Image 1 (cartoon, rainbow, N blue to C red):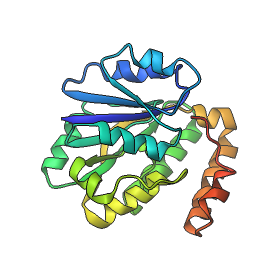
Image 2: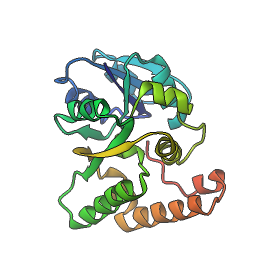
Image 3: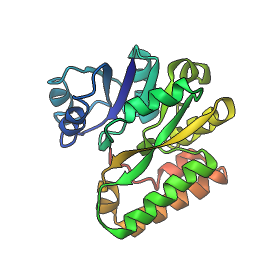
Image 4: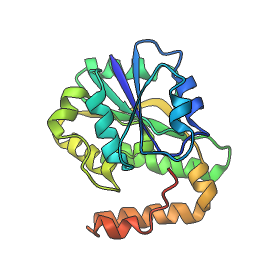
Length: 223
């Protein structure tokens, strides 16, 4: 069985859509991990046949809590504003049977603006060449490997990057051609150029070992 873990915080505008998008896939366990939302996220999510749990607002902690509460032998971590291309679950299961232990999907930003083609292309190239995955690329991993690696590090930023690097050292990973469709809201809210520049600045700071707490100050958190 596949467990899909969705960390959320104040996502009442998106939670219905992402859960409806998963309704046609049979045999899924869906776990919504709420970070003490102040809106109606929990109320809306509870209307679906999913497991809803709560903990402190911290994406790494939320995803780890979701994994602890899951029963699936494959875990997929999905952001609340992302949607899977049909057939993605089957494609993941196929490559796991072929000996891969985890990976991510190909990112597609849901906007017709040409600049987003450049942004998504750079992210997909990074994932394929460096095997570094971001959370909005729908990271997936076998449950036993997730447990062996100790899950996501308890940090407030770049938990996805650190986890993908841990995976790359232990197992074969793959970037599937199947797409994860990502909302452009973060770029549109913060400004496309500004948000892209901040992302590059954060990545550079991370590579240069700038303390996470300092990087967090400039992170544009819209969860």
